[in-house]
Length: 219
Picture 1 (cartoon, rainbow, N blue to C red):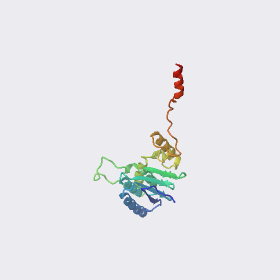
Picture 2 (tube, rainbow, N blue to C red):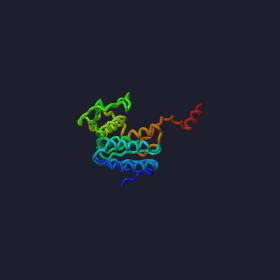
Picture 3 (cartoon, rainbow, N blue to C red):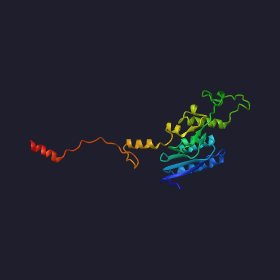
């Protein structure tokens, strides 16, 4: 049985498709947990599926509204897709199963559906579109999810590709034990039992008192 560190609360978030009611309920519970201002909250992401874009954005807003004293740890025990990736990236510290993968599909809105900053809402005229050209609001939310993921990973280059853990380490998104040990040593923290000690410059050897006395007697 896994033992949590003192002050750390564990929160499980199952990754299921088309579970809007589930995510609404869990988001409310997460908000209540964060309102208690715990020192750390570890969110366990597990399951096959994808968190809907709107639910991922809602969870993100709750995490952003937490106390600055609360640290978030996200632990992906399964591979992640779409909105699930954004929730995982929201952790101050991120863990992921070694053989897990992440994936997010590419979505682009038609150019004529992009908002014009120079127009007011009352001035904008609805444009004709048939049933095949209508934009699904969920796709609009997904575009926003990709914009936020792009703050961590280059979406343009990685969308539509399966991303492995080594690639995530290259972007500094996954905890790296060796780097942590190096930084702890470099900044003067006490090394652990398996960590190398800081090598200090060799000091000049002290002269033997008897040797010095014999040299003085010769003089």
